[in-house]
Amino acid sequence: MIKINLLPVKEARKKEKVMTQLYVGVLAIILAIAVMGLLAYSKNTDYNQAKTEFEKTKADLDKLKQVKADYDKLRAVQKKAQDQLDAIDKVKKDRDWFIWVVDKISESVPRNLVWLTSIGFGKSSRAGQPGAKDQIVILGKSYDRDSIAVFMGNLSVIPCDDDKPEAEKAAICRDRNNQCMKVSTDQTTTVGNASQQYNFKECKKFYADKEDEGIQAQKKLDQCVDSCAKEECKGQAENKLKECVDRQKLAACKPTKALKCAPDLQALERAKADNLKLHKEEFIVYDKINLSFANQSKTSDKEGGIPVYEFEIDVQATEPH
Image 1 (cartoon, rainbow, N blue to C red):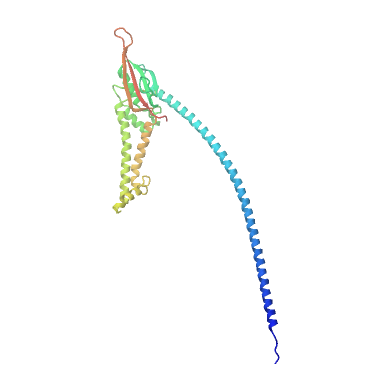
Image 2: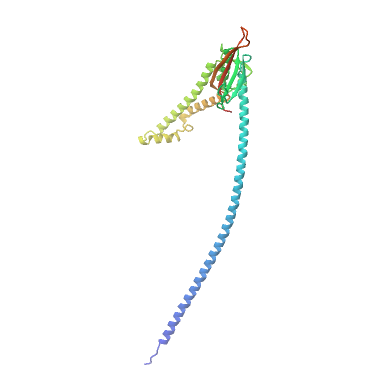
């Protein structure tokens, strides 16, 4: 039998296999290094791009900061200019208001019966002590007390389309005239260019009644909204009732939405509009007029001289409007 030694062949094959694995391992390492290099290059490229974009964004942000700084400066200049314009407008408005009030006071003076010696704004008394801006002290003289009473009555009459023809007057102004312009045997006033007789007591009552109408209309609307909300929350648990009512007052029962409250809302809006119109031309707060007499003198020292009454009327002017 012939024997063949195969050991050298096996060793050769084993060596070849090891070399093959070594080559594969080296190739894998090279490939891994190449991939890592490629990834590193890609990351570096991304970093450079990000850095470029960051620097560009930073530059843009710096520009925006400068733009904002310029804008803030312009806003400051604009505000300063607006404040100056507002101040000028206020001075003009106060000046026009002053002239208007003096003109209305002048129209209220009974001709040839009362004459004014001084109209002081921002004073509290004849002594000339400082007072509130809306305080006006009127000093004057008259031959009789009745004429002074008429002057006070004239100040308490608030104009309401008095300078317009009857057909162009607002309905509430015509109602006011029907109530105020009644024959009065003891008090006569002049409004505008026409001599009119006023019943001052009834006129004040008319204004008071109209103000009360507005108050009552508001109460009635509030009651309607409250009733509507309670009806909407009927059946709610006691501990959640108040929350439900408050919520419904702002939702389904809101005055502008609740149909059942529409008449009350309309009544309130009419009352507000009427009161606004009635007081639109008010220059003196009609129910804040105070009279005092300084002294009584005569036109001459001779017996039988005509008595002259010096008076002071303190009034509160309305805000400029």
